[in-house]
Length: 311
Image (cartoon, rainbow, N blue to C red; front, side):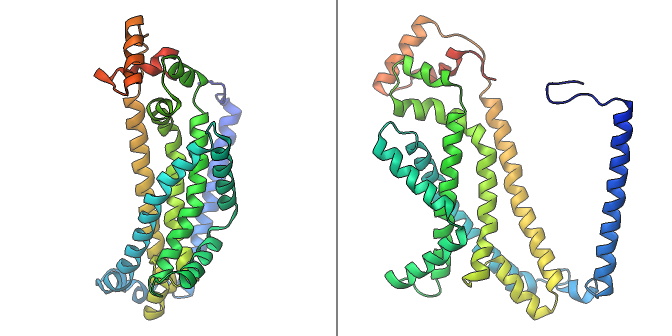
């Protein structure tokens, strides 16, 4: 099948693809075998090193679960704060008021340019000198602060780009029926841009989960990776402990990504347009409801149909 971006390979191209695939599989198998033999020669595959994870619950209840709990707490709190803050900053960058737009742009560009680890260290010093937060809680607050400041600025750019990616006719149609800019953003642009932004937003949420490990490496925050280091020192199985922790990270991030794909598909199916064109009476009703702030019988749901079916 031929499309704009892809031409159906011919017989020679198919043979080359098969040859490249076979060569790649051979190289991959050789690499896996090399890793296996190297670990086996060093005794890293001995059952004694992996036994704590398969024969009892001590490793999980003492080390893994407390660290995972701290990781999820910090990541969840950072997500809850960063998502709405990023949305506000992203919308503010599109404001017609210069003082709002400039202030939001300076904040976004400033915090987006600073490494998240620097923000965490700065937050730790800030809480130590200017607040009464106990020394046990400072690493947690510092990690959340760094994650929120950095990721909110990145999410702001995602929101701004998602809104700007919509066809201009959407905003023109909303303005034509008398919607104010706030109503247009809330009722027309944001709902449609969610599906565009969702993959990038979820990717950033995955980054939040992974970046909690920076707090454990530098700020003594007892998250999952820091707990794995302590566990490996107790059992003497550094490779095995890191492997188990890596599997847990993969499971968490894969769950987030899978949920995002499911939600994106559901939103896209729910927003399929009928292609119907509003009549004069329908436009009058929508304009009247917009003026009063009401939305009787879901009349605003047809705004997108003014410009024709959605792609």
